[in-house]
Every structure is written in C-alpha cells, then in structure tokens.
Length: 207
Image (cartoon, rainbow, N blue to C red; front, side, top):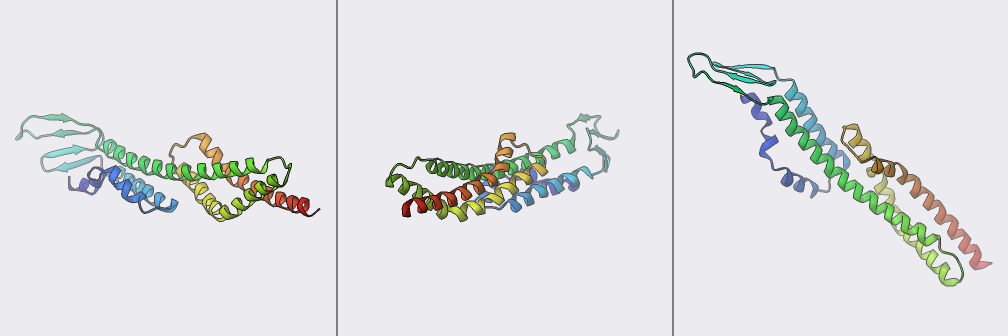
C-alpha cells in the first residue's frame, strides 16, 4: 500500500487553509494554472496504477476492488468503493476549489472594470447646457486617464483566466464568459469616446 502514500496530501491538507495561504500571495493566472496542472498530473498518475496489486496474502483490486484473504486467514470479503474513483474525486475537488478561487478573483476584477466603464459612460452622456456640465464631463475624462493604466493592465489577466479555466474543463457561467469577451471592446470604445469628447469640449470652449 506504500504506493498510495504519495497521494496522502489529498486528504491531509485542509483545503480552506491551503487556499487562504495561496490567495494571500496574490497569485497570477499562471500560478492558478500550475496548481490545477499539478492535480491533473496527479490524476494521470493515479489512473496509471495497476488494477491488481498483490500484498503478501492479500490481493487488492484498485478498480471497484475487493480484499481477499487466503484460507489461513479469516474468511472475510470486503466490498469497498472504487479506490481510483475515490482518489480521483479528491483530485477533482482540489481542482474545482482552485478553479473557483481563480474565477472569483478575476470575476471581481472584471466586475470592477465594468462598473468603472459604465460610470464613465454615464457621465460622458450628460447633456451640455452650461460650463458646469463641461466641467463635469472633463472630470470624467480626467478620471478615465488616471485609471487608464490600471484598467489596461487588468484586462489581459481577466481574459487569460477565463480562457485557462475553460481549457481545463471547469464550469464557468456563460454570461461571465460573454462579458469577458466584450470587456476589451467596451474599454477601447470608451477610450476613443473620451478622446472625441475632449476634442469637442476644447472646440466648444475656445469657439
């Protein structure tokens, strides 16, 4: 049975504590993927194990397996759950937890980006009636410029996270995937609009 001790981290580690420590390091998408790949490789190793293992007088079948004791032992037959299935379930649970943590992190970033975009869009849609309206629109343009690098840098990791999670077969809400696909377009469109609005306001101010 020593061959299976290599998998003891699957149940010895506390998932909540492990994830808490991992997330405290502000991991990148590549680090989430490294964790997911680690458990995927563990699953490949588990599934590569033989279906039959003799252990002295004891024979262990790892696929919906039984314990058989020879006649010099008590006549006991144990029907046990599929060993590989149980180990694979533990692996899958770890993969899902890391996938969910990655999804939560980048969904939050995406939602914050959209909230900012929608706020600026709303402020730029203000009717221009007097100088106060011009001032408020210019302030919206200024806010965009001050946050431009932050939003620019957040988009690629958000897109990468959704691509990665889908590539590893993790369930993601279709609505989220569609939003992530439109984020770059919405942001680029807003940037272009801000440049146009600024030019219009400068024209209006001087002429």
